[in-house]
Image: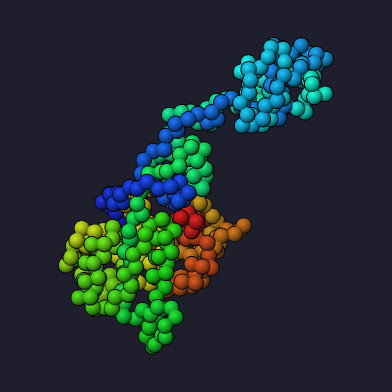
Length: 394
């Protein structure tokens, strides 16, 4: 069996950006991926401005706290100032442009004014309380790089540059195929031997949250001819194919054989628990990710193995998920696979859910992350272990 790190590395080595680009209105760009760098065409701020309410003047015009200066103008944010008259001060407000000639702003709490003149009780050094032109961003600076996934603050930053439209990657089209005659959709009557299809909803939610376009091909029965027909259709319409079930060694597990008949299997079986029967290959040149059928196995392999590959195909620049350290509140013997335990973190450390079966989906909702147990390494109560909170997989 291939180690998890080797499997992820192999997937990422074979990945290429599959999504094209399009120009989108800024307000519709949340969660989208930049197809090019965002470069500022302006200085931010565009001119020197006041960091607070107070009085703008020349340092050289101050002759002590008993020497009053005439107030020659009033400058508010959004109002262009006049050049400062020599020997005077300007009443100024936060964000307002500094008049030409002024080199300091004294906060109003350090001043006394009768409306026509002002006494400056304490003087600042030149440049005090002035935000210089381009302090935040200089014209020509690259503020966001291609491949960046846009957040709310990024949209605000782009808007502050006056940019209304952005070049982003088109959404990666990901086909989801559920296999298994035992699967029934929620809301339908369930018969003996059948189960409700939870994997479909897990994967749809993950793919939408990651910013991709879901192409749902429904449930296919355990018939290799039907599976082959659906797979071929998905390969023509989608950028990547994700299946659940059918990649193990049972007599009714036909997905692996179908993929081999239409394309190839690069590798199969990973030293991970849950999720060993994970397959990667292609269907008529379209990348194929075969996830296990058990719901926890499907979730874990989607997060740990499929996610980095799909992010690469979308063109997302992303860093590796870095675990946090937590104190173990449980003991666990090591095994020949890398294990992802469902845990819940608290002030005292990480507690484990008693039932760690790959079908116990409730365990993933009870907890807030996965504890990573390396191959053949025991976890001893009280020691620090690696934990990956679910939020890091966003």
